[in-house]
Length: 173
Image (cartoon, rainbow, N blue to C red):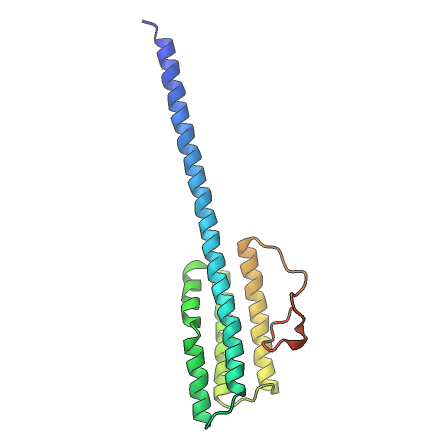
């Protein structure tokens, strides 16, 4: 019996099976990388949106009339708690790389300082208020830059809207 054709057929089949397995594994790894990228994009979008909305909410609450300073403080702290910033922050801690986590945590603490300042009676637009918003703007710009780097997105050449009416201090600097 001639074994050469049989061995050639078996060798070809083995090579075909191994090549298919390698291709499947590479496809799986590629899909896994794409899914991780999508997940980070979702987490980053949720966080930056929550940060933006919370900033607007805090400013709006601080500008409204309240029966007392205690009522103002309570409204501001409730707005902070109800914003879901804690949930967005926890998702960030679980998903993002360390530099992004540190930058997002810095933004979180800037918003906490803004909230606490308003709760303690800081007037909207005062020098102290503007300094807090400027710190938040710089922290947010750094956070977004790190997020874009992590996602493999290039730097923004210009801002999508003019900074003249930028109440949250996040104008590109």
